[in-house]
Length: 113
Length: 191
Image (cartoon, rainbow over all chains, first blue to last red; front, side, top):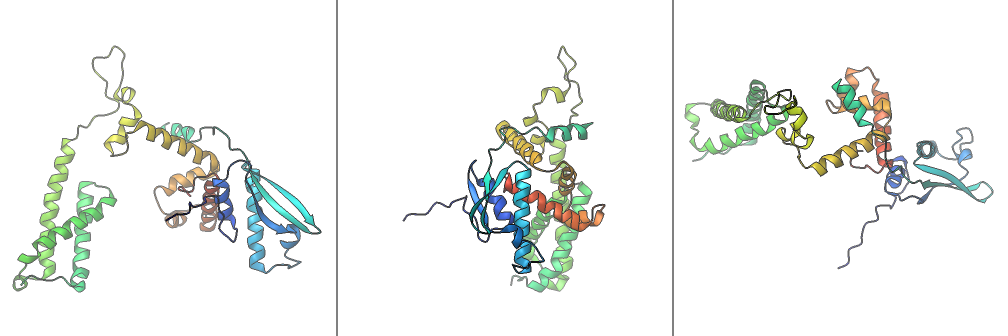
């Protein structure tokens, strides 16, 4: 009997902060994921109330997480226009640094001193 | 007829075993995670001795206490003997027969040193991988979170929140941030 191989890059729906980070952790450089489709700035605006409050907060967190990942240099965020107020917000995995600067050694030396 | 233990009996016996195991751990200076093993050992010993229990001569609690005390005494003897068999040496001891003045710390490789005597892995490849993993995780985390990670190896987030100085909400927010960063860096096992 054939047993399907689990796709470790598959994303659990609905997309949230943890599943976005899990996807990025398993993604190869250049892999992309559309984390939102629509007009993000309008939908996260509390005054416009275009989404229910809990959905809006979840979307805001997701967008903020994507922004943080881009700031950390782990991904690029781009958007593709499909129509009027219809954008795909895409996170593209970046190449990881081949070597991290040693961060544990200074701590160990400081502790030993 | 052999005595059968009921759940009510276990309710009586468990605290006694816990107390005796805790006392033994404290007396011998054993780590607290061994307490449960010692407790299980004592309960097993009691089960093997249960057929000789005579209800007419005393309560089950008294019988169990005597059994536990005897078992604790035998365990203490064994643990003390094991400890005395170990050769205790300081890493600062000078190594004789060397032209240079070398200490044990200079000649023992990390993979066979203190970790080996603590029962940790002595595989040099595994040690290297562990070092690389730690480096990778450390680079992903914020510098200010390193002290929280160090504290979390000693106590739970709940205890750390009680000790302060970080407010509980800030602490849990930073732990969530750390977990997400580890996930994004591809280290889900640590997250």
